[in-house]
Image (tube, rainbow, N blue to C red):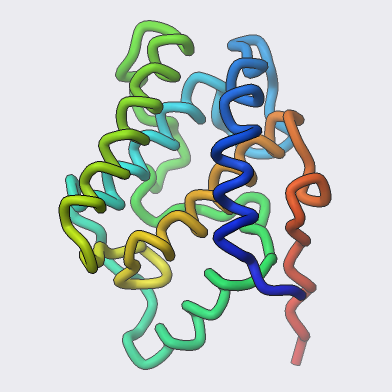
Length: 175
C-alpha cells in the first residue's frame, strides 16, 4: 500500500479522463456489475451531485469508526468490485436513465464536474458527506472521485488499476 497523492489524481483528471470517457460506447459491457455504460456515466454524475450536497447522504459508518475508515481515502487501494452503494435501489434494479443517450450523459457529467469544482472553490473548507467516509473536503472528494472514476472505467475495460497506480484491497482476514 502506498499513499494516494493529489498530483496522481489531478494528472489523471487533466491528462487521461477525457480520452478514456470518449472511448466509452453504449455497446460496451461491464466485467462485473449490472450497469450499462450509459448508466455508469449517469451514476458518476449522480455521485458528484451528492458531493455537492444536492441530495441527502446518510453516512452508514458509525461515527467512532470514521477516522479509521477515512484512512482508505489516502491509500492507493481501489474501490472493491461489486461494492453496493447503499443509496442505490435495494432491489438490484438500475435507476431509470435521465438522459437520452450516453453522449448526453457524458455532457451532463462534464457539466457536473465543472460545477463541483466551482462549488468547492466558492465554499472553501466546505465538507459534504460521503456514504462510507463521512464528511469530506474538496481535496478528499477529489481523491475519492479518482478512485470512483477509475473503478468504473476499469469495470468497462478502459483502464486498469495498475495503469492508474491503484491496487486491489487485500482479502480480509477470516477469524
